[in-house]
Amino acid sequence: MASYDSVLSFTRKILDNFKIPSYISDGDSLQNLPLDGHLREQLFHGYDYKNASRNTINLCGEHMVCFSQDMFFCRYTIMRLPNQEKPVFFLAGPYIFQTVDQHFLLNIQQTLAIPSSHMKYLQRYYLSVPFIEFEDYLRSTLLLLAAELYGGAGQFDINYCKGFLDDAETFHYSLTAANPDALDLLEKRYQEENRLLKAVTAGNFNEAQQMLSQTSLLQYEKRLPNHLRDHKNHLIIFNTLMRKSAEIGGVHPLYLDDISSQFARKIERISSDAQYCMLMREMLRKYCMLVRSYSTKGYSPIIQKVMNHIPLNLAEDLSLKTLASLFTVSPSYLSSLFKKETGSTLTEYVNHKRIEQALFLLNSTDLYIQTIAVSCGIPDLNYFTKVFKKQTGKTPSEYRALIHEK
Image (cartoon, rainbow, N blue to C red; front, top):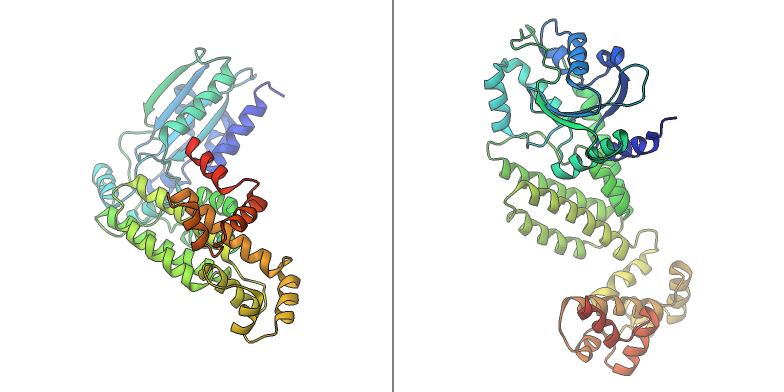
């Protein structure tokens, strides 16, 4: 076991999280790796991966990191592993830093003289190539790996080069593009989407965030010349999917309608690729939070109604007697059923929701504590302070002071 095996394994896990393929291979086996998903084999007549693999060996010497770009603007990183009897390489890629929109595709087609009959395959290929939003972060991660491999930051050279896998200046295109594995790609995409939506339905933000990073949802088939309008249309679809997932997760439509409308306005204000990615992640986080905070899934219809009523009427009378009368059940029945299904008394639940709202107001406004107490349905300031401290461990004044210190 080489001394660098653990850091190499950890780096590959990071790359896998970004959906970037990585390989460890000797020079003889490079030709068998699906480095470009067999793209050139499909597009070019008689393409020879053996020559391309030999070029890789020549490209990357000892104690060298090669950051390479091919003719399709896909990126690869290559390092020769030290202390090996024969050349062994670490390869990462393909990945891409550019947004693949219609303008990008037309430029590629024009530059490489790609027949129109082949463009659909190329477009689908790009959907499988991970788009990397933070170029510097990825490059820093790979350079840290190189420092571990070669014994320090000053112990290796960096080679920025073009032409990886491009074996000749002129290619002869196949008469017909081979039918790509379109069905497999489509099925995989839908499976990834369904796993993401299930995570949102469960309110599992960590899993949903990981799924978003690992799937191709940040990439999609571009349909319009204006890629910003394409981004907005994609976000509108994503907003709808998130809303329906949260609804299946048991969130009342009133909450969903409010947050969905907020996002609809934000979508129309985005003006860059970075804002597109940030807003998608914000949607994911907030819809998951909605499910965790307001889902009534799994409760009986009467308890669902009570749980939906309480957060919307915190300033009103939410006593057991009032709620029982509102939903036409006896107080004793409502009390026992609520305790059985939620594990807490109705009073405890109401107070918990009121203090949640108080925390929100303390964090987001400069309202007087007395005003916050009244708006949360506990006008008695002494009692409000007692309930607040029981739930948070601090008085409202102490909590606000902590906020101002930050």
